[in-house]
Image (cartoon, rainbow, N blue to C red; front, top):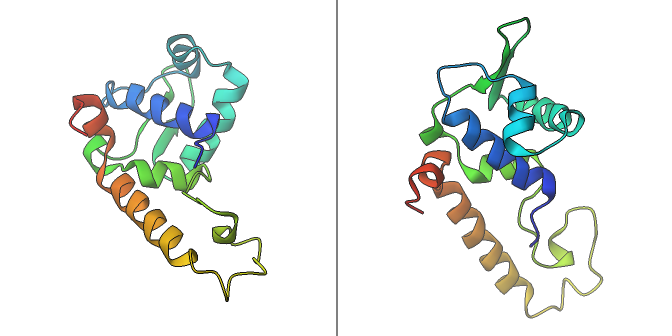
Length: 134
């Protein structure tokens, strides 16, 4: 399982927003603090707003902020939005059908391992990452 740059940046950006929970943070502030281009941030923020993890406000005092408390936002939720759910083996990708699926003796193991990873990601919140209690 490899987490994409968008998935990693999304988690970092959301931690940044969580540390400024009561304030809207401008895209230029996020860009400067995170070292990510404004253009790429805009793409990420569209995904996070669409997924209702972030809310936006237009105007001179506008920007972005979390739409819910950091302790209610799981890493699984974020990675699902960015398409970074665990697929440990090609046969687990819903787009592809493995010709060996019916006779494969390992598919159950990959499914179990994938489930364990997702359950763990679902237990860890942004607040856990901020507090380093993971």
